[in-house]
Length: 212
Image (cartoon, rainbow, N blue to C red):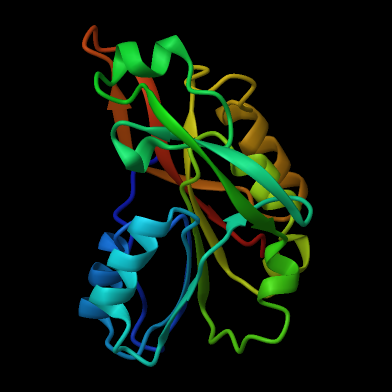
């Protein structure tokens, strides 16, 4: 049986919401509404989305925006910009992606800085319990490889995973689940499942909790 869960944005004790791929910061609004003292580090490589995020959340001293993409090594990579910009990815957008989610085909490309989050957040104070929310359109495993030290300082990982190759070369759900389990974050529960028009599961948001 698949365990379903309702994810709280934060606990009453306060939490880090490290939101990889911030876009406009909708998750941040939920987290802040649940707990105004929540500390948030957000990552967004697209300039327009970063500017929007900053305009909406910039006055909050508990929110820090890092205008980078998360990856396994410091680099400059080309992001494939989708017509629906929250579907942009450092991986090529596949035909299955645009077929399953019309309007998400590639509309352009942009070079963006990529950084290891272990380095970016090395000196950041991370209140516990801490959560990493990961939504990077197929680049999840590469982002995770750059935050192995960070994972030792957090309690939960909440990640979007795919059962189909929506981005060329992306690791699928079972690979993400196995990697996180090997790094002491076993599968805890499924929060949402996205299906195709035919009813076939395509993506899911999964919560992983630190072992023990």
